[in-house]
Image 1: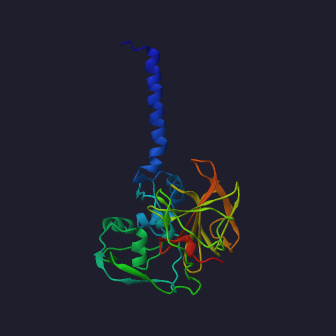
Image 2: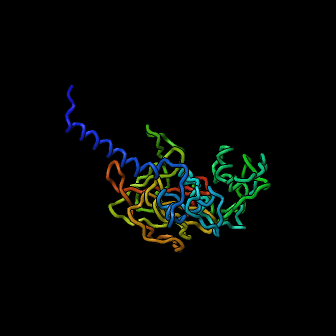
Length: 299
């Protein structure tokens, strides 16, 4: 077979294109570490990897006062929206978690909370909750950390009473359909509701084109931005420490630090990338662990 110069040229162009695509996307979705460049900030790095600043700090045992420097090597944690939700909360002394001791681990030099959680096959959110730690926690050599224990909720607000739903029924896929009260308030009007099973549970809600997505619970906006695997996201923390996560938004209309009341818009519905139909994903987290959105308090 004779290979012409034109074919060789086309092959070279093809492989160059593959290399360029890999160079663009692999650093964002595959790297587990990153070397700080001049001009970098934790904020800019978090945006690059579609994570939160709090996740980067915790994975690298950094405080709010620590300044990163060119040449410094940072751990880039895997995207986990449960961890992001847990780390976005403001610790509330009236709503702490009572830890039932399991094992303990003694921190050694170089340890991070993220690394300890991985070592014991725990979610970072579980480790933080078990030790009553907030997103600003920094560990030190010799410190005792509780691992693989059991946690029980304490200090629930009187309004945090679950809304009852009927038993599950499978729809033939990995999703679950549940019958929920038609009187329940949702972020969009009259949605069809599909429960999502998997690493993080929640619901997908149908929506109208460019429909406003409204907060179903008063609280403070703790995070807005792109989050890997969930598109544009808004986290709203209620006064009882629950995180209401509105994801796959088409647009965002709030900023971090804003206070929203029930019914305030947080953005607009986005589109399903497969069908092109308007939709919204909605999750609620308690101590970093997902709960049934139908059981989350409204108002």
